[in-house]
Length: 439
Image (tube, rainbow, N blue to C red; front, side, top):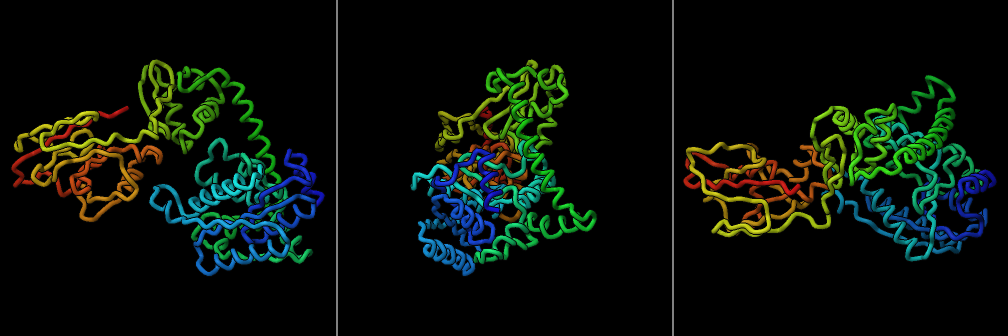
């Protein structure tokens, strides 16, 4: 197996024996075997272990196990502790996703500190098959066909051609110690259900299905790389920020793929790409779509990205009793209680002025913000409400919020007012607030 890994690494352009590598080691069988093979091949390895702290004493035992093993081998071990709870406030990020993000960031940080240019991870062929089905079930983006890449930035995956069974057999033959992670069998996670329920059923339907799937996924990875290179060639000279003629997509049999490649990570789900493609194919229709960095606008037969500078955030503006506003698209006016048309609070908010504590403040939404929306009785996180209303994750922090002097949210601008400031039958003074979007 050592020779197979060495040939695979050479074929995929990975560093050769004698090179210095940082090896991500969890303590599980895959990463322990990876470390053993790399050392056998003559690589100069350092170990990095990321402690997510999600499994209490079990996490502590994993950390101690890896540290002790590295000490026995006489190699440096770097431990980083991350707090996954810090990402739970960010809508759309699951515990597993947050743990992965923090883990990769921590590994990169260690590599930079140690001056190491490559980080070896222990993903294998069965991981790639599981990822393929996860992508298929959630919505296969253009990159999804390649499942787990052999290389992504400074991360390399030397074991990607090996099966889980081969890795386990190697560990047993060489007496390599490892720890079992109980969460791998947890049916709470979709990957666990794919691994322990879906794939065994496919093996029952067709004995040898696992072997075939591993081969097919490896082929798909190569096909995806070829397709991306071909799409890039056809898109040469087109700049989404300057505007791309819609006929580039509408008149091409691979229009959907071309559009998806051009948009890249701006859109998370292929179904949104379907809607954009349909709009590109409808002459004379002007439309825009919220995306990660701003808006995708279709006008005059061209598709263009209008960016919003996320680092600028939402302007912070204070509004006193005189209702004078400078630097924000807000207009305050007194209204007659008999002539109002109360709504949920999208572009116009009608508020009970006597229930407001001045000065008011306009700012961007924050992960911890919550309020009782109009028509509800319980508190709701603003980020959850924005997620339900399909606002892209990166745009949520740009959503304006109008607060009172106590910091309580009175209007999630463009979406909903707070129930406590709504106009009631006994309201004496009505405050009308008009909003003109920044983009």
